[in-house]
Amino acid sequence: MVNIISLLAITQYHQFEEHHGVNPLDPIESFINRVRALITSKGLKGWTPQTIFNVEFVFANALLTLGRKGENADYLQEAAAFYQSVLKTLRRQDNPLLWADVQHNLGEALTLLGKAKPGRILLDQAVKAFNNALKVRTRQAAPFAWISTKSRLGSTLIAIGVREKDTASLKQALKLYEDSLEECTRERVPLLWAELKNGLGIALRNLGNQESVKNRLLRKEAAGKSSLERSVLEYRDALKVRTRKKTPYHWAATWQNLAIAFLTLADHEPYNRKRYKQAYRAARFALKVHTKRYMPHLWARTQVILGQALLEISKKGWGSRKICMAIAAFRHALTVQSSEQDPIEWAGTRSNLAATLA
Figure 1: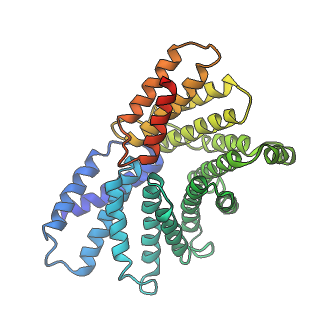
Figure 2: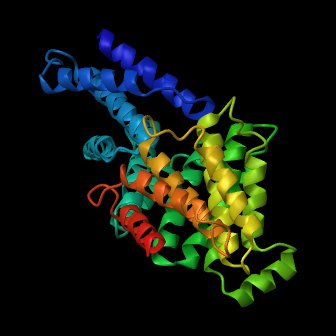
Figure 3: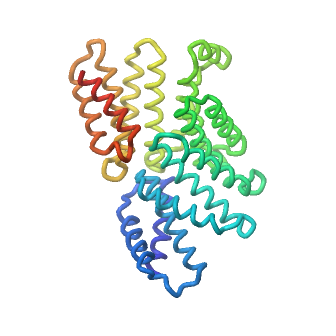
């Protein structure tokens, strides 16, 4: 029982750190392995069904926490399997709040898994789970839970929109974030506000990337700035709250998003070395937190962004040293990415490396 209590405490601690800091994941991994051994060895024999459920629910949430930070597919699959198993017997009318929590967590796990795999089956399942959660987590009854689920749903819709080149999904995500920001202000809940600003930036960036040149110019004339330019402003707003000292995990994620935004902007403009240097600097900021040991997949993704920026900076006769640095960055990423776990990103990085070596 001590193991379970410790696991609960450390999971809650890391969920807090998800917003406020970054710490090694080794302790929670150790506890997960010990509790898994307890469960599989029938160490819970004699416990009441409710107690067993509580233990397994805490265990699954710990797996989700660890999988979310480390983007570990095995942990995420294990968590998703538990949530799906629970929902076979847990009915909404029996415990609506718990049912909504399980649906929300299932949506998170499926989204993270779906982003790493081809196709959209898992992402569609995630959308369904989030929409189920929103049947209980309403704006009137639980505004902050409603915002949290809306934000995660927005992230899933963006993933679908990017994969399917589906502008409608991106616009739907954009509306989710804008509606949520009507309820959530920086003064009232700054961390949630920053999360929404970051999500809004991602939606705008991807929407801008899919717009035709004509539509982009028309939108810029109407709003004063293009969707891509607006995305940069949203990220900068998020960084007013997400500081390295208080929220390093999300601070780094926002810098990574900002680096991608600068690269995307550069792709839609005549060659502009300044944009690529901005992307390079932003990626370097992200790498202050995205380390290979504790966040290998995020580290690899940021290495790719760094390599892309360096490659473009090296063009127009700006020196071969940057090309060597770009090659090194792509190779660093491939020490983590694999065709089995990260087929989409692995293929992209291989393509980048091949093009650089050509």
